[in-house]
Length: 99
Ligand SMILES: [Zn+2]
Image 1: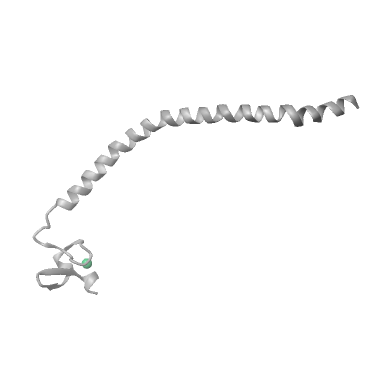
Image 2: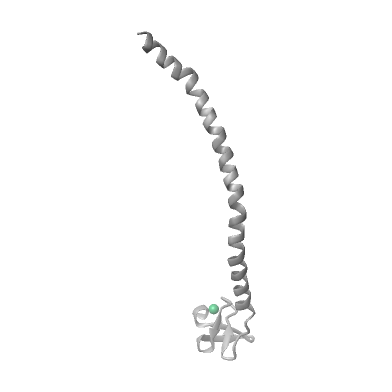
């Protein structure tokens, strides 16, 4: 009887509240520390491929249209002249857009 009365009282009141608070605080601190360490790594990893991709995109845009190609003025895709469906006012339209 004496033990039964003591056990729930101790768990309910004291030990449950204190350990929870004690566990939460250190966990948040540890997560923040890990994130701060990870961030520079991620930025570095994304920086190199990102720069490469933008360079490729720019190159594709700058590449001049070949003599046998045209830029559709509707979808703005560079097409082979065999795909040109019509030309209005010097502007070319591909078969896809001309329908
Ligand atoms: Zn088109």
